[in-house]
Image 1 (tube, helix red, strand yellow):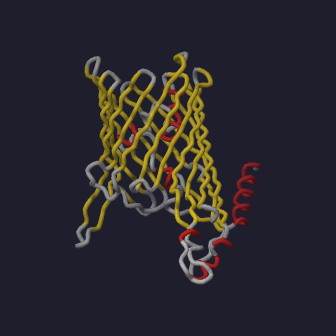
Image 2 (cartoon, one colour):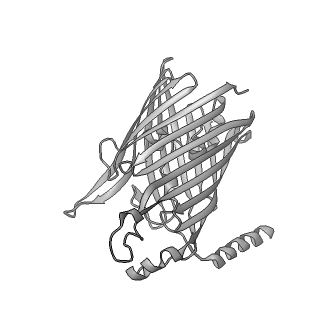
Image 3 (cartoon, rainbow, N blue to C red):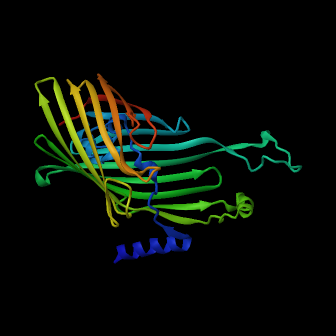
Length: 359
């Protein structure tokens, strides 16, 4: 009963605070992905992620990190450098069967001109009065993973995430949510399941309407009010098969299916209730030192100018090299321009240090 009272209190508080909406594309900066390895494989890593980026993809993968500590860094630029996307994570073990992880994600557009004061009292343009602001989204993820003896050994994990979004001094939001992930190894097969925003991720928006009410009144726009935005749950199921060719060569083939439950989306499989977005990837390695990656995803149906429809998809390509405790990865997304999105170069760095974990 206490749980029911708590849920009722939370939703009642949200209702008092403002209107509640569940837009189809909420917190989309958390759908881009992190790590050049994953992006080179078109995000098909839920079942095989085994480094510090697991805090994002599937925190159960933290248990597969071979060293005690790992730091991951990533930087990417989108829209010809207008938007910057950065990721930092740290992972460490608690004991032989549990692991901790922490990460920060930032997606931001900086130096946006604020032209509200461009005209002075005489109606003349004064460029010195242009101000600048940033629109940035932040996510802080706290991860815990534990290996359980049930089902012959399975890795279970969860994320508690805090989201902060800001648009200069005009508006800001704070939110929170939970993710749950699992991984299971069966011979040369790996299975993975990721439940994102399993409780719904709530963003409480607060608007400083006094800064824009004059402009909005002149342009006929609706002055924004405080509100609650809910990110609906989604589920990702992944499977990976490992192939070994002698002592030096190996191939990892992976496929993920992303299920969304916010209505029909423009993806490969869509209904009025849910949509399924498939992703496939291949990683070839030599002595687990040099890596070549390929991936395909973002399958969409596009309407042409002459009423002819065609299917677009995004091919991705990646490279990786491991030098002692250092791994450098590179990815080029949409390298053949087969999708509507522009290509992007992504670099990431992983550093593992300290002695090996006790098995």
